[in-house]
Image 1 (cartoon, rainbow, N blue to C red):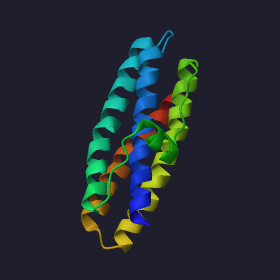
Image 2: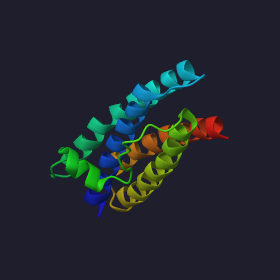
Image 3: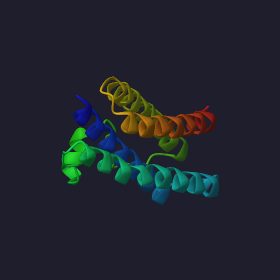
Length: 142
């Protein structure tokens, strides 16, 4: 159902942005400056999408999830309370971004089938953004 998939996409984007921000705050190592800058841009870009996703939920006459527990229960990305090495942080984000992409693609297809072209258009833009994130994260972690 489109609304459930859209809420999952919103929650997954929220969790992915928070994880990237957490790593941004705590990254260490010889490449600190580059990783810190990259993670800052990553979490900011993803975080900016969460509000638009919540508004799309509202356009379907539903309430957007907002409580932290609700968002984390819906999210495909799980919390991380460890501080891994920098490369492991980026590897985890790479894998989480793949989950984000999969959720976006499923939701996009559902929106297309439902004739929700405005929603599918926005999701298509998000897919493109996360494909770029995937490329960058793969390039760093190889």
